[in-house]
Structures are given as C-alpha cells and as structure tokens.
Image (cartoon, rainbow, N blue to C red; front, side, top):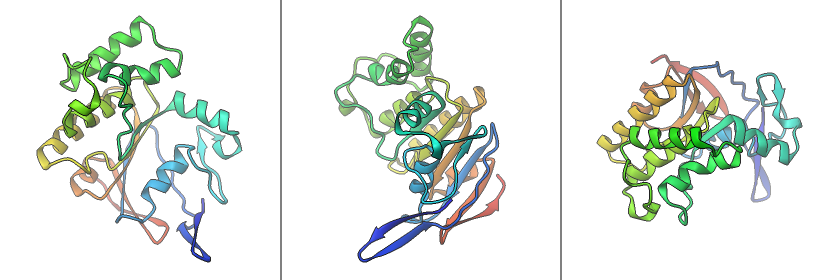
Amino acid sequence: MHKGYAEGQGLRTVLDDLELVLHRGESLAVMGPSGSGKSTLLNLIGAMETPDRGTVCFDGEDLTRLDETARTLFRRRHLGFIFQQLNLVPTLTVFENLLLPLELNGALNREGRAYARTLLERVGLQGREATFPEYLSGGERQRVAVARALVHGPELLLADEPTGSLDGETARIVLELFNELRRERGMTALVATHAAEVAAAADRVVRLQGGRLQEVAAA
C-alpha cells in the first residue's frame, strides 16, 4: 500500500508500496524514528485512513472497499486501540470508559460488566471505578487504556507508543500486563514503538524506514 500527504507545493511519500502480513495470534513491533510513518501505518490497518493505492485486507475482506459506516462498525467489532494520547473520555469515570466499547457493540450486559470488573482488578485499579481520568497518574491512565482496548475481545490490537510517556518501571508493568492479557485471549497485536524494550517483548520486529519495512529481529 502507498500513502502520501501534501507538504508545501509537493507530496511527501510516507509509505512507499509497503507490504505487511500479520499472522493470527502473533505480536509484531514496528520500530522507527518519529515521523517515519508508524502512526500512519496503524491508521491504515485500523481503517481510520485509506491508502492512496493498494489494499488493506482483514480475513480476506478488503477494507478499502468499505464505506465510512462499514469501516466504523468494523473497528468497533474487530479492533482494540491504545492511542498515543490515550483518548480516555474525561467526562466519564474509569468504569464508564471501560464500558464504552461494550456499549458501542451492544454487549453492555451482565457478562460484559463482570469481565470489565475483572479487567480492572487485573490491571490493579479495583476501587477506582468512580474516579475520573484527570485524578489518575499517567501509569494508571495507561492501564485503563489497556483494559478498554481488551474489554470487548477484539481480534486485533493496535497500540501506538503504548509506553512512550511512562517512566521505566511503570512502562515495564504496563507492558507486562498488556502482553499477559493479550496472550490469554489469543489476540493479535501490532505495536508501533521506538523503545527497544517494547520491541523485545514482541514475537517479530520490523523497522519502518524510507516508507518500507525491513524485518530486523525475532524476539
């Protein structure tokens, strides 16, 4: 797939006829410096943007052929996101943020609520259900974001610099939680990162440079 953006009077190529195959159940880390196109790659795979040319396929379905409504429904049902800026809803409590994906998928039932409470306990935030995000530490907000991404049982997790704003020890705890919970449910993960310790925890590592991917290591 190919993707570029207008820049001044010209066009800057971000992804240059890039090819990527992600296998079910694996975790793949995409490394590269800031501005290399890691977030763009996640946005394309997550059906938040469309490539200028090429296709993005999920289980044989070409996402580029879907209209915006269909892409939105696809994201809700099949994907879990951990955004670089977290995107927790500030007017919702911790528990309400966690229930949001269930509500959007019509799964806000007793079983869903019970699993959400289990996840809160697993990420160490039991008793903080009624707290608003502004009263949480950075590490606590990150753990809420991890739990929210997992609560509806998505097939694919997309994480953009999931530990970028955390100190070393907090980053280690969040990363261990993410990988432990992901493996328990057999979820596939694509993680964009510049952190070597995050990449080392993945099954496969590739580097994005000059709009192309190069496989560099196997964890």
